[in-house]
Image 1 (cartoon, rainbow, N blue to C red):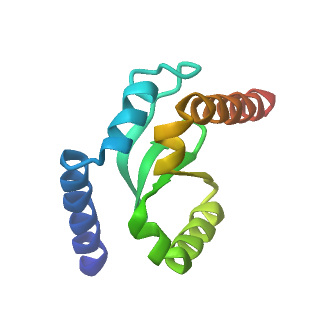
Image 2 (cartoon, rainbow, N blue to C red):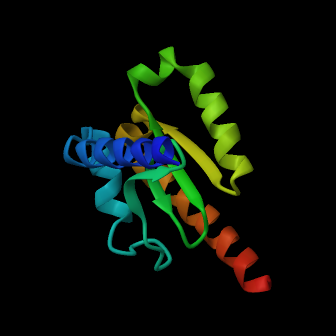
Length: 126
């Protein structure tokens, strides 16, 4: 149990550091999805889920958004494993590249909006 608590403390501290050091692309997306701007859904940034930290997370609909920059190209195996684990925890995971954020932010936001609407409909039908 103590190891799990220490692990959670480490993850939470790292998440705090990541929130203070977001990339320009993360800031650009955050400025468009924060404050319930998309379908009234609250997003969190650099949010711990288990032993992972996702770039953005909407707990209401269990949506994780990941931005892939240069370092992600080197860690594709890790990203696939992490995505699989997050999906097993009931999360919907979507990924965008930094290029998409910089070149097609409108399309990125529309994709996020469509997924939010779909997930809200699932919740309302339960």
